[in-house]
Structure formats: structure tokens, C-alpha cells
Length: 280
Ligand SMILES: C[S@@+](CC[C@H](N)C(=O)[O-])C[C@H]1O[C@@H](n2cnc3c(N)ncnc32)[C@H](O)[C@@H]1O
Image (cartoon, rainbow, N blue to C red):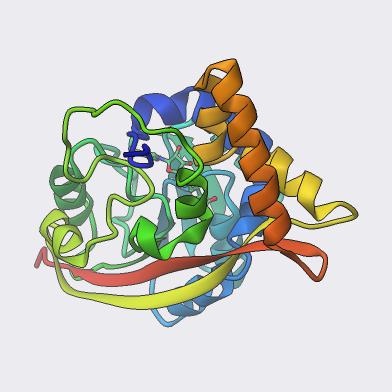
């Protein structure tokens, strides 16, 4: 079996993975560009004047929500200091937006209780998801709402699966059913079990084009992006020379095969999840 389900937990986000995402925020925002308007539309349907962006990363969602709701107070929370620094740099001038470096699974907002949690792919990395979601519910205003996106299974996400197929078989690792990582909430039954303290949980599927490359040389752009972000990055860093060379040849062919009309795009599949805090 090739490895796609490696853990991406707090340590990785506080280390190399967070540093790479902070350096690459323009291209990670671009990869989500076809999903973000749908997520923002779902958020716009919810009331909320004390909004928390969980795992806000470099802050694109926080900035958009704070801009759309000038009367609201918005806080982006992220465990990676580098990503919060990148977010602060982008958001300068928005008086109703602040960022904080914290583990959202135990962090408490000062002042008014949150009445709306939002997240773009930032809630799948908790070490103990049921405890984290119970905490978010317990600290929220009565009946607070939550709107987040996350990936559906890897098998529906060729941006990940096609790359995983190029990897050499890996040694079996101790089985963890749903390790923290991009696909931790792919299974709605499992996600429901994790969403302790939440009710009215709904999953809407959303298919989108994951943009990996664009610009004057989309293929080179995608290869450079994949060398920093996602499953290819780990392979390029860790495979022995010969296996890495074979992997890189396969990756080039794959990216070329997905290069159409000046962009390298892969089909991607997400859930948009909404829920109400069961805390009254
Ligand atoms: C896939 S990235 C998404 C970032 C951002 N929401 C975006 O859309 O660009 C996941 C984010 O979750 C953050 N994260 C992971 N575990 C966290 C935790 N326990 N508390 C807060 N943030 C966390 C990571 O540092 C990272 O920024």
C-alpha cells in the first residue's frame, strides 16, 4: 500500500508543514479558489457577530468574513506561529479582525462567546476530535452555528490519489482509523461521532477544481507547488535517490496530463458541513 494517510497533527503544523503553508499561502489559496466562494456563501447565510475561524492558516477566510461583516468581531485561531504571522501581514488595517496562535481545541475567546465558527479545511487535525468539538460547543454562545469545509475520501480526490499511486509501497504503519490529516473527516458517520456537542449536522457535497499550476509555465508551477505542499512534498523529501527520481518522472507526466487551457487542475471533492451547538 502506498501511504497517503500519514498523520498531519499539531507537531507537523507547528513545524515544516506550517512553514511551507506560510511560504505558499498564495498558491494554497489558489488551490481552494473554486471552493472558497461556496464556503463564503454558506457562511453568509448564518447570523453571527463573534466569529472564530478555526485553523485559519494564512487568513483568507477570516479576512473575507471580517470584510463582509464590519460590525462583527472576527478572530482567526491557528496553531502555527508562521501562518498567523502571514495572516497578520495580509490583514493589516481591518480593525474588526485579530489573529491568535493557539490550539483551537483548548483555546478560550476573551469577552463575548463565539456565535459562529467557520473553517476552510482547518478542523481535521485535532488529536482528540470529540474532545475538541465538545470544547468548541461548551465555550460558544447558546445555539451557536458552525460552517466548515473538509475533504471527502481520497478516492474521490484525484489531486491526492493520483499522486499516491506514484509512490512506492510503504511499510505497514500501526493502524489508526482516522488519523489527523486531510481525510480525517471524509466519512460522515465518523465525522458525526467526532462532532460531540453539536446537533443538526448536515453534509453537502461540493466538487471543485483544485488548481495546482497556472501562469506562464503551469506545469513548472504545479511541480514547484507539489514539491512544497501535499503528499508529493513528503515523498520528494524522504524517498531514496532512485525512487525519488522515478517518482518525479511520474509526477511530471501526471502534471502534464492535467495541464489544460493554461492551468493544471485536478478534480477535488469536499464536504460543506453545518451544525448547531447543542449547549442550551
Ligand atoms: C489545511 S490548513 C488550512 C488553513 C486555512 N484554513 C486555509 O484554508 O488556508 C489547516 C490549518 O489548521 C491549522 N491547525 C491544525 N491543528 C490545529 C489546532 N489544533 N488548532 C488550531 N489550528 C490548527 C494548521 O496550522 C493549518 O493552518
